[in-house]
Figure 1 (cartoon, rainbow, N blue to C red):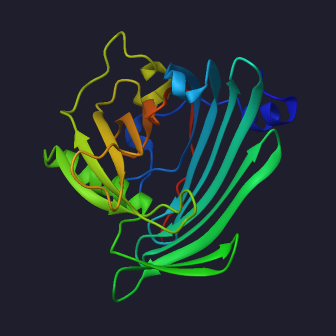
Figure 2: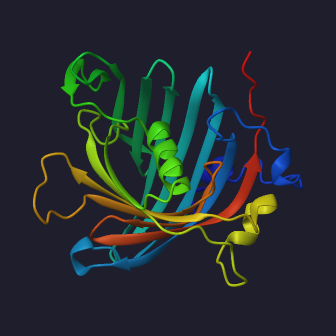
Figure 3: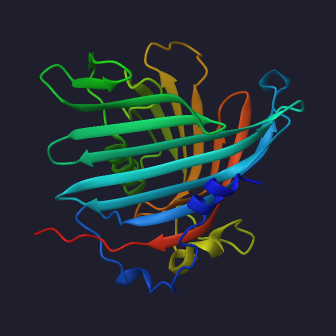
Length: 275
């Protein structure tokens, strides 16, 4: 089980009201709605090289804000990892802010192992004449110039737009501040045909008012920007995507191990109106 202090954080607010019909939810011009989603994580597969014999956890994703004021994302990813000889608790906490109009992106990620801080990365990125300029403030002050890149919410909107027009494959360079916050990744996205949840759809019933709403199956593979030929992705993620930006039935492939994330709770938040 999770350590009690972390469990209290991750399951707080576990009482969710009955959701109104999808048409009742307000969304800005982007079509995205503010929400808080909780996913239960389980180990699907692990290679001998990974050294992992068991793994489970919980992910909490909160997306808030508006098209005119910008969007804030709070993300927490907690897993307990069993190596056979010992167990350790991994806790990643990320907060980002993205202004779609000004194309400004701020990020902060803290990573803990057994409640001890391992890494703290903070910075901001914005457009400049050559592409994207990143200014890191933690762990050290540093400036990095990158090629033109999409930020995370922009990339999500690109996926939705391509899904709507039936374009099932596209590639983009994405900067999300992950790892050391000093590089972008090349993302190749495959979007399947829109589907309606079936009776055996794993976590559709947890989507509340969206339980029977059509979705697109999506797979995004992220590659190092200098990769060439038949390079393997550094990370691959598959999920079921709704037009409003909500996702469920996740599969996260890190190469040496694969996790699944099933939606366990969904709360739609008040979307802030633009003035």
